[in-house]
Length: 181
Image 1 (cartoon, rainbow, N blue to C red):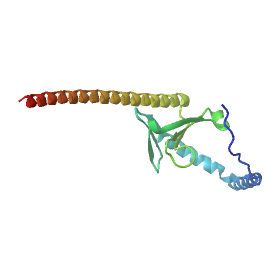
Image 2: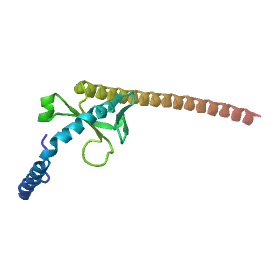
Image 3: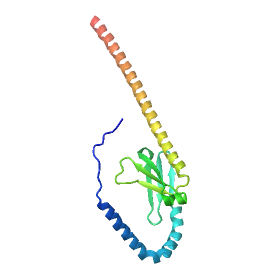
Image 4: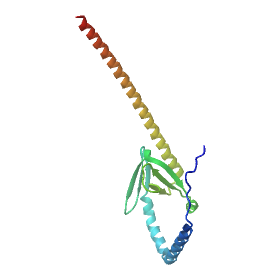
């Protein structure tokens, strides 16, 4: 089945000039900051271990809890039923270090990009699969619970219908007895 193209986007050639300008800007910034590289590397070396120790992600039965931050602590709790996608990304430098980025997108999220992303989760593909499996388990439990609720509602309706019919029969018998008197 083929989807007809409703509209195609065209791109302004000025984007090329924009990219070139941005490349020049970042190159100039890099030239100015080259003498600061040893200082920056030392600070990152000192702080990176603590930042890494403060990061955690825990998969619970109904939600994913992500914590991170040293000075500004952040904790996000993402209900599994709201997760629409768990992306597994790896750029060239990340590939060199054997790292992956997990990104979580949710239903109803505003803005562009992932609600939460985690860089460097060990066994990232296994963690991703565990999240998706638990999400499916919850969805199936929800369906089973909904079916059970529908079934109990049907049973209640049958019981009520039976009771109403019995009451009608009793009323008819009482009316017949009164009319015979």
